[in-house]
Length: 163
Ligand code: SF4
Ligand code: SF4
Image 1 (cartoon, rainbow, N blue to C red):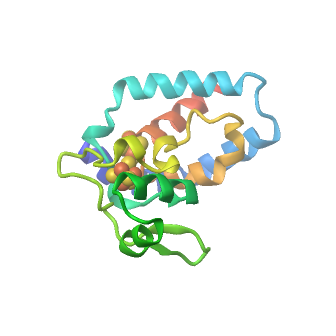
Image 2 (tube, rainbow, N blue to C red; image 1 turned 90 degrees about the vertical axis):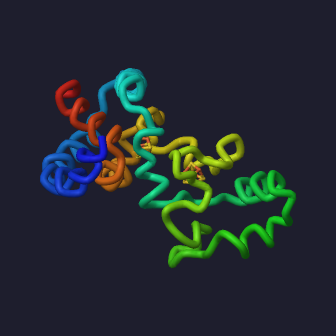
């Protein structure tokens, strides 16, 4: 798995133009059953890919924290939300709340998330490959294939499945 993860940025780069063209076509004319296709591809992929052997998303990028995320996680730590923000978060150039550092401070050496039950919504949903109207997040997916081996595999399978 680690070898594949290490190769992902280059693999994604090599596939970038092909993927871009594919997503442009998908956006123009998504198949009627796209939600169903994505659900199946997502489930099939995550039956084989164990995130605990990877954690590359937690190691290399961080989630955006919504106000609800901050409230929920601060409560878990019995902290005031403002204190939690001061301690762990910063505002990025787009005005979004993000982690002060990567790898994520809540990631353990065993790849377990220490705040799993209350983790941010963005972590729960990453890599968004079971999302409805998947064609709407093609730009995000073009980036995610360089980070997430599962997203990379799913996009490769999409290109075979959706002609
Ligand atoms: S979501 Fe993707 S990048 Fe994150 S741990 Fe799972 S396979 Fe790895
Ligand atoms: S909060 Fe948990 S799931 Fe989210 S990036 Fe950190 S370790 Fe990963």
